Amino acid sequence: MNPLPLVAVAGNPNAGKSALFNALTGARQKVGNYPGVTVERKSGRLTLADGRPVEMVDLPGSYSLDPASPDEAVTRDVLLGRQKGERQPDALVIVLDASNLDNHLRFALQLLELGLPTIVALNMVDLARRDGLELDPQRLSAELGVPVIETVAVRRRGIAELQMALDDMLSAPFCGVQPPAKSDLIHLQRRAREIATAAVVSETPVRRWTHRLDAVLLHPIAGPVILALIMFVMFQAVFAWSQTPVSWIEDAVSWLSVQATAVLPGGLLRSLVVDGAIAGVGAVVTFLPQILILFLFILLLEGTGYMVRAAFLMDKLMHGVGLSGRAFIPLLSSFACAVPGIMATRTIDDPKDRLTTILVAPLMTCSARLPVYTLIIAAFIPNTRVAWGVGLQGLVMFGLYIAGIAGALIAALVLRRGVLKGSGSGFMMELPKYQWPPLKDVLIGLLTRAQIFLKRAGTIILGTTIILWALASIPQAGPGQRQSDVSIAGKIGAGIEVLVKPIGFNRDISMALLPAMAAREVAVSSIATVYSIDSADDGAGAQKLEQRLQHRWSLATALAFLAWFVFAPQCISTIAVTRRETNGWKWPIFMVSYLFVLAYCAAGLTYWTAVALGL
View 1 (cartoon, one colour):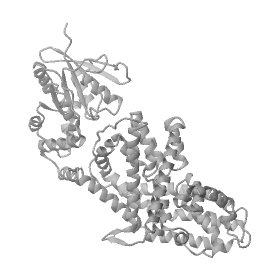
View 2 (view 1 turned 180 degrees about the vertical axis):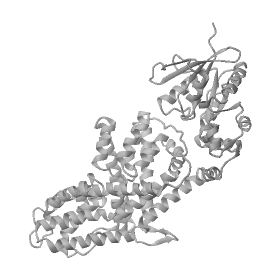
View 3 (view 1 turned 90 degrees about the vertical axis):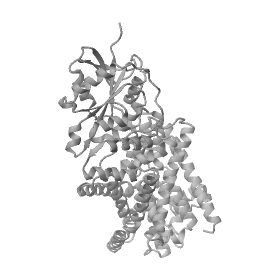
View 4 (view 1 turned 30 degrees about the vertical axis):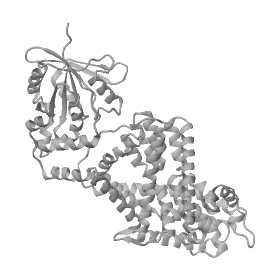
């Protein structure tokens, strides 16, 4: 007895695929799991107009035939006849969301390459018309080379026409399936947009502008250039826009220090408050405007819909170094903090892809590094104009972020060629509409970020600073002695200095390296605390921290310090979440070790090169 013809229903998630399947099969359905995997299998029976029964299977929603999840792997294997216990479909129904046609056509183009007899169900046309989009199904059919039927599955519109098209298709002979070609995502996107544009009869101005913007912002050459320019402007703004509010905070910290000095009697208590709490925490809080400016740009890019497009632009580059396309969002999150970035890797199904992303996430320049970068740049890089609207300080900041990104990509490439050998996979994504983000949402986002930063300043940074103050204040220096020379912290710093002196680091930096493991910003508060304690010895109490650095550090040392922080391991919280996400200490220890080696080598090369150039 010949088996019934098997028709598979496929499409992107949220295309209305299951609603169409239910409309075709009614209550004649069976639900179970595919053999060997916990992925739901829904099958049903359809009776054609001439009485012939047809078996239908509703495949899991997918974005690509290059699977990035178990669901997508099942869809691919069923369509190619590789799924255990499943036979290859005789025909295919592709379901497209009419209101999101160009995005859904990417997967449809991959499916058409299979060579199966195919019908396209242009679903949810009512919603498309409501949004001002009118499509020509005949033109779309001509572009795709297969029948296109308009449907509204939830209201059973177009179901009879689809059944008739299935009847005609199943009556034609079938010559077999060709293996799918590896399709480039950029090419698929471009072709999908061309077809979608050709099928449009009329649309609202908003939709037209979306396509025009995407044609430029997603262009393979113009797109990356625009992305780089946006990042460049962002880092220029971090310095240019923050000067006035930074000076306000600096004045407030200075006033608070003077008031505390006047009220408290001389001794350890005043030193604790003035040199420890105010000098240490105040030095970090000063950089709140820069952090808020950085997050203002990030919130605007997310809210306008551009951030997802940036992910699409970066996908090909990331795939080239062995990273999964799905790694972009976790790595992007790591610009704010590596902890949520590492946790976001749970969306990556391939274990090696996920582990690679976890191990390189700390190389993305988190916001905690911003106070360190800003302090050193403000102290040693002149605020000169390189070109109209381009400052040297912003240019250096931009270079540091690019160095972190480049370091992450190179590290991923080495890992995927070595201990985590493999290649990355691309991914499909929905492109949201362009829109102006609500001002309320932006303000709430900035307020939340300010609260997180100030909470860290009042807890982790304050606690670590007080511990360092205690170590830097005991024992007390005698007449003619510098406090940092005799204190416990000074002795510890002198021991560490033996290891880091070859790369240009002095004892002051050595004392800041260990506390900075608690939080990166602590490096600033640690140096501020040590110099504040020593200020009574050298009469530099009125000097700003930047001025004190200029007297104690060479430019070569400052540049080496910046290079160190580009690559050095992040805070203890990052190490802890890596341990939790990898279920052991093996990979956290590996991560910390290779990052320390990178940081040491980068700082050394920077210092030796700077010295050779006379800096």
